[in-house]
Length: 390
Ligand code: KIV
Ligand code: ZN
Image (cartoon, rainbow, N blue to C red):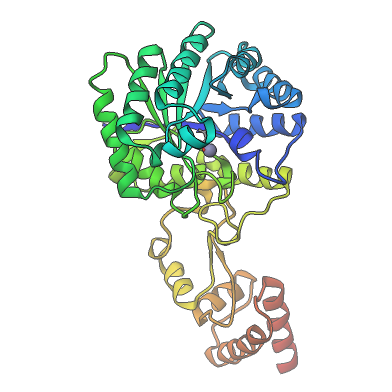
């Protein structure tokens, strides 16, 4: 049976706290509207206790898209933060409060300087308070992947008993590796099944070792039902799990994962481009799914294969993610097949093999001099060659 994974986009909270990514309220609304077109299940709209501006932005996002999309916002495990979240999201159709509190030894000892029991009690009290405001509360066990498992479980069990309906397991510092993170999620899921309360198990990964997507997919394979992700993987340090990578990973490998999402994948590129435009932060050209070169093929062997059958070198079509059609970039490594394809596309004859060979040799000289050869270069090359030879 295919499971539907809940997609929470936290670009406007975890992504936006990146240096240089600050957006004003109008920009946040524009982005939230695009997230609606993309059909995410939940938007984490901000951290309202952090500033009056953030509070207002969250309220505006609720006003604009909160009638159809579930909205949450972040609170530390303190009353003032929880009140700010409640006040900013309460008019949404399906809001929930997101509480975060660390469970690793380093968080308990260095950040809070309290006993483990005292920190756990803070979490329980925060959930109990949030439950007086809204029926749904998410609890994030910050730095879960570096936490002692029995303490982590004790916390989860206690906050679920206090009323938490979503348990989010973060790999806050991107320390986890796929096998270990998958095992952690498996163990938590297994124990959650023995509790009476129905709880959604969620994951939130960071990309410090470049494994955020792999860890998230491994978590899904081991029972996670909800993922927290950002567009372009924008987020603290090396970023968060990229929405487009997880969504397309599940789509392209649906037989392996047996999971789908509600994401309209044709909107992925537009969403990525809008974020780049709003933040001014470029996407690396070879970024999976949304990078400029993600669907460009430049080697002769690959171009030849693709012209015979797209499936030879393509695992998904560019149209599926809203990108431009497959692009063959002519370079000195391109072969006769790709060059011929371009010449014919431009409306020229290629039947005379001797003439075509001369043309191809001229193309190679040009391609050696210029890194990339565009259609207009080929057009000029052919016209010049044929005019001179007449
Ligand atoms: O990385 C993290 O632990 C977080 C939590 C608030 C979920 O961003
Ligand atoms: Zn995070």
